[in-house]
Image (cartoon, rainbow, N blue to C red; front, top):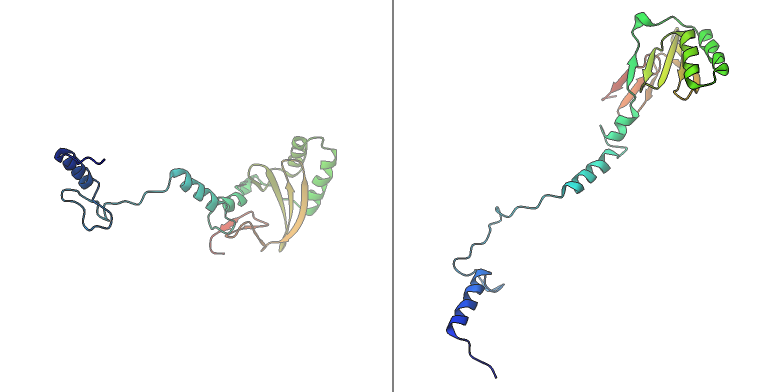
Length: 181
């Protein structure tokens, strides 16, 4: 058997109904209830973790200009002042290469080559040392890595090697050129 609602219960239900905004699709909300305007409703910002994650992914894009991956491929070059350099020939570089056969450790190799050739023309990332012997329109590069691996190569003086999408290095001077290639 159904019981009729008392007037006080009916009034309480009507007030609660008005507070929640009326019935959906039944027109305007009840009087006295405010609704936020479109300008007041803000779009929530993405979480900080998502933003950092997207930035990290973008920085590893190999085609991205000025990204972290590109910056990692460009070495930090420390040039030795010209007054501290000795003149070298291809024969000096070959003699230094023969000295490496007797070196037992990479540090010993660096000491022997530095004693023979003098200070390196430049150092890349404080690990790779490069000595240059100029020969007219070309140069001979003697490169000694931190692990003791050595290499001699000949390059034209005007040769620029690609380091990344927007950076090049001159093979004979060590100069790095960035930007509009």
